Length: 103
Image (cartoon, rainbow, N blue to C red; front, side):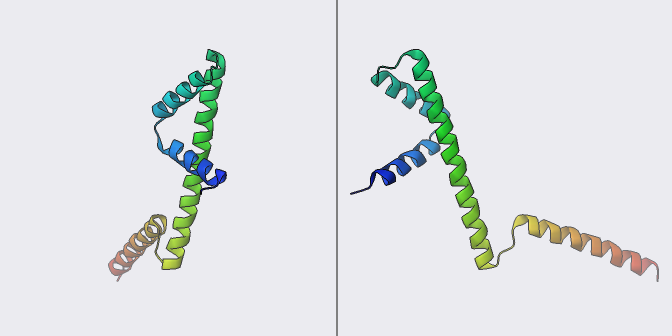
């Protein structure tokens, strides 16, 4: 049986993957079912949106970190590193051409 923490985590991840409209729709439905007035309902929906965005950002941070670590383990260069190398190669090619012209 799943723990309450795991269920909450999976629910949070699920919310982050839904569109804003779907989250608002779900929040309004829950607020109506709980008998909240309009103001409390709006605040409830906003809290859900804020928490959804927070969870989404945390998930993105975790994924970025894991990808970076995987790249390091696999010894794979990232795009920014490749772009630096390409710029350096272009610079060296220009220097070689300049040296050839000066001969």
